[in-house]
Amino acid sequence: MVVKDIVKVLKSSAEQLISKPITYNFPPETPLAEQFRGRHILKPEKCINCRLCERICPNKAIEMVKRTEEGEEVVFPQVDYAMCSFCGLCVDICPTAALETTNSPMIMGMGQDGFVYPPEELAEPPVMEHPAPPKTKGIVSWARAKSIWAIFYFTGCGFIELAPWLSSGFDMERFGLLAEGSPRHADAFIIAGYVTRKTLKRIIRIYEQMPQPKFVIALGCCPMTGGAYWDSYNTIKRIDDYIPVDIWIAGCPPRPESIGVAIVQAMNAIQSGYMGKEERILEFR
Image (tube, rainbow, N blue to C red):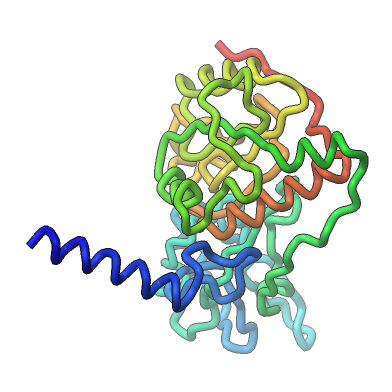
């Protein structure tokens, strides 16, 4: 029986090697996954301005904004993806299917300004744009971008989506990205999950011990706006009120592909000479 199982494993491995590479191609191609709930798409002609999507949203991510059509004032949904948890309740309750979710989760940026999608942007189908090859600013910037050592602080489900990057499927080492257990030797700090008043003290301590230049990536809506715990008295709503954040990734939690695209964007920025935001720490007791 043992020999049979070993032969079965070897046969399966050989079939995978022959049919396709075990490591996924990157940048990824869309759609990433057929069943994933990503960015919304709005069909204004179907919207009856019932406001049900705004009322049911548990994170208050949807706000109805006024527009003028044919001389009449109507309202359409506007989504703040810094707060959205992609739960799909707004889509389920929409009586006319005016609001639907796509399977494109690529929403990220170096600031939260671009996370608010007005009705006009929601009506346009999402297009995933891969980072353009950067201009190299010196050998030091190139070497720094190709050898990022990252330390993690996870308090929730964000780790489940980041863990695949440690496997051969995504193989983060091909990007020069390594997991580091010591903040004194880390270049990047990845934060995911809800941040409470107690965990914030540990996050600040890790950030203080990291050498310059250092880069912070906020993973998911929890460190951005509190996520599903936005109304909790003990949850920090914006981690950048206490330490600077270089890249934000929307999602609850983001898919591994989204994380990969954000990491490549960070590498491109570093290779172009980006040295991270100015160190700023708010005293917290």
